[in-house]
Image 1 (cartoon, rainbow, N blue to C red):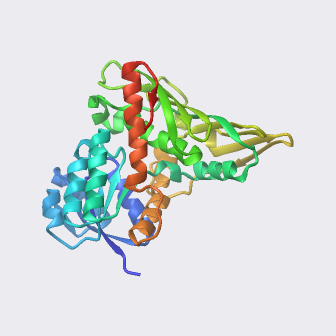
Image 2: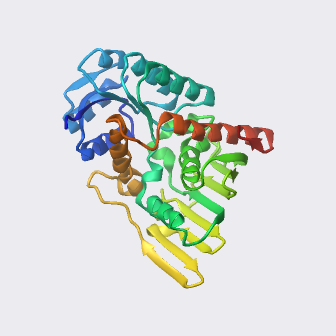
Length: 340
């Protein structure tokens, strides 16, 4: 089968790992890359053998023929780049968060729908091996009907070291990690009907929030508390960027804890199994589980680009963006928000 010709917009921190992930799929050929900082694009092109380098997306889209555009630019540029690709009739994959606002995300989805081009969001968190394994536990029915859950991504890691631009975002943690963890909640339990959120700021030198706690009321009847933190408060380093999950059912409980262990407790006792991510030489050990999940996510999106069903479409991720937006509204208003 012919490989998909991929053009990449963006050459920042995450681009190197996205490019490495594309190479692992076996179904794609990296043809072009562009960045407003051309030197970065040239460096990545040399590292990954990408033949065409451009300074702007318009130049790239007018250059070598492409089958799909992968948008890895900063979130405030996503709308411009997605709409540009759609206007050229090219399928698009966009990094999360899809957009800085729900209205912008709606415009992006609508533009791709109108242009008749496939549109996907690279939502890789749900593709982590321990999270997929946890979903299989829930689907098995071993703990009965779930009624309450906790999803925690609380890290002491110095995240601003690798991505200093985070300091200047007025909407930081919910946009960054809320996009992931709200999607995980939806992946496990379906859609939310209401939420209540509180946020805080521990770092004095940042504009946005670095602590957030959200309670989600799911249509399935499950109450989920999502706790997020990048307070850099000396938590054990090895937990980053692991997500810890605890779900209670009417026949037992399931817990995803440190080092990828899942413990299932029922009337029969407790059983534990470990579900580590696959190992890739290019993965940064400090981001192991997150970066390894790029590969299965991209493999799923390749299927979608070939006309099969894929999980994280733009239409689907729009619901996650709605939750992020509602969480900010809730924190600002100090009240629960109904999800329409």
